[in-house]
Length: 67
Image (cartoon, rainbow, N blue to C red; front, side, top):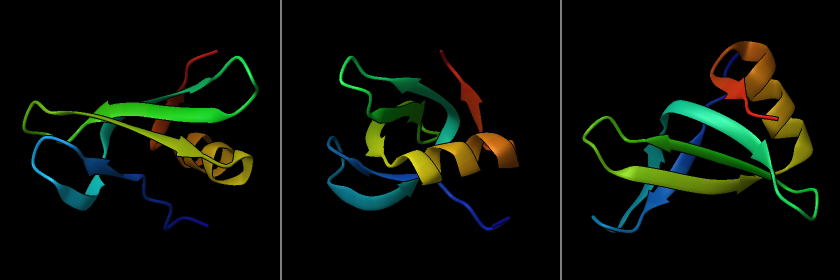
């Protein structure tokens, strides 16, 4: 699973599937996984992830673990 890529919806520019840079994955209070990063242009991005995709992104080195 080396082709893992984190994407999110950009609320500011209304673009879908924007690649996320400098992602940090955290756990919410209810146990869900959330990735926060930016789009490379200064806009912040946030998206919810499943456990499998979150762990795969951390393992691949795309995102940092924030907990």
